[in-house]
Amino acid sequence: MTEVRGQLSFTDDLGRDLQLQEYGLDPEAGSTLLPNAAVMNALQNLVRLATELCGAPFGVVNIISAEYQHQIGAWGVDPGVCSREDSMCAKVFLSRERTVVADASQDPRFADNPFVTGEIGKVRFYASVPLQTESGFVPGTLCVFSDKTKELRPEQVSMLEVLAKQVVELLELQHRTVQLDRTYSELKASNAKLAGFAGRVSHDLRIPLTTILGYVELVEDDPDVEPSSTAARYLDRIGASGRRMLGMLEDVLSYSRVGGGIRREQLSLQDIAEEVVRDLGVEHDGFVEVEDVSLHADRGQLRTLLQNLVSNAMNYRSTERELRIRISGTSNYHGTTVFVADNGKGIAPEDRAKVLEPLVRLRRSGDGPGSGLGLATCSSVAKAHGGDLNLTETPGGGTTVAVSFPAGA
Image (cartoon, rainbow, N blue to C red; front, side, top):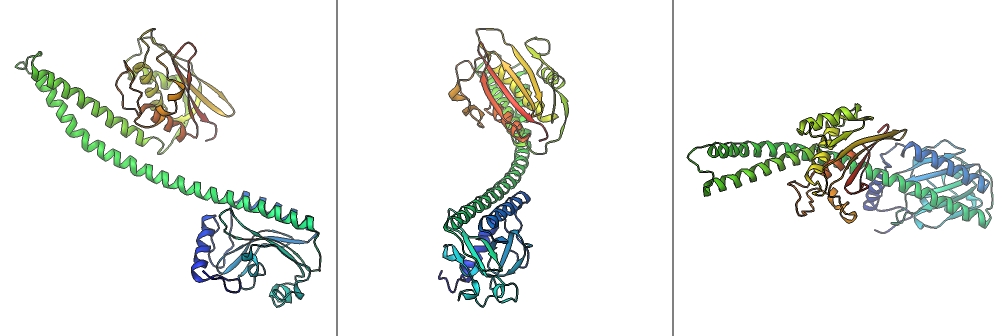
């Protein structure tokens, strides 16, 4: 679009306001654009530094929308809003060049401006640097001014330009924060829809699948079916496939629910681990050792995590030694880290990132059955609590899983 007298066409004005919204700066008519508090404090400090370096009493960061000039950082004056038509910066900021004027009353661009004539102010010295992002968008200016005439030395102009770049960095930080917040909100909504969909599909599929497995068991118990017959072999395959599918449905449902609605409470790692061992029916086998630690976590999700990790250790045990699993933890002011160490087959370093992805299995000889969702679910549990999951080798062979639960998350 063609620029006319420093103003943009209607289409470009609309695009400008949309771009400002992307930076978390809402250009609603008549309102002051407010970035987050941390950004505002940093902007004020930069403006103060700019005024002191230039020896000027006043400074502002101006954001220029389609209709208004918004001062989102100021020193020496209270931040405010004026019409874009009255703005001095709006007349020059789209040139993308710095503007330094010793006496604005003698400059034809500003002589009749209300900030110069006395209608709003009596600006004489005026210097501004456009705030240009890497994409070429110019949201506004860093501006210093005085009611007395003044000249700037070249090094002062250079420092003003450096500070303008720092202002742009802060605005870009605000931009990335807005993008992350939007992505997080979309992810939460998507996860909620996924959980609902998975629940409906799981329910709809489990009923007929359970019915099929029930009929398979009835036929298998029928005395007229010979255990060595072809029909018995077919029934055995149907039953095995059906049970694997039912397990897969449960895994998908469990994976989709992780992270939605964390309810933290103070828990004993030993209590939860012992519940898991009992649920798996291996409480008397003696291969699970537990060392207690207190942690702040969601009870159901901690159970899911431990159950998946213990099941994995059982599934991928080594044929060279008796299975041993040690569950322990350590706490400090950062939070709690839970360790589940086994002496099984282990996971090669090059495969450790891959196995954390959903539905990924290594398919090694002798591995037990699985859906490829166990470690992915555990990783999701860690992330839902604001932590991480890491895989390392257990000394002597096997895998150690470390899951962090940050304090105050």
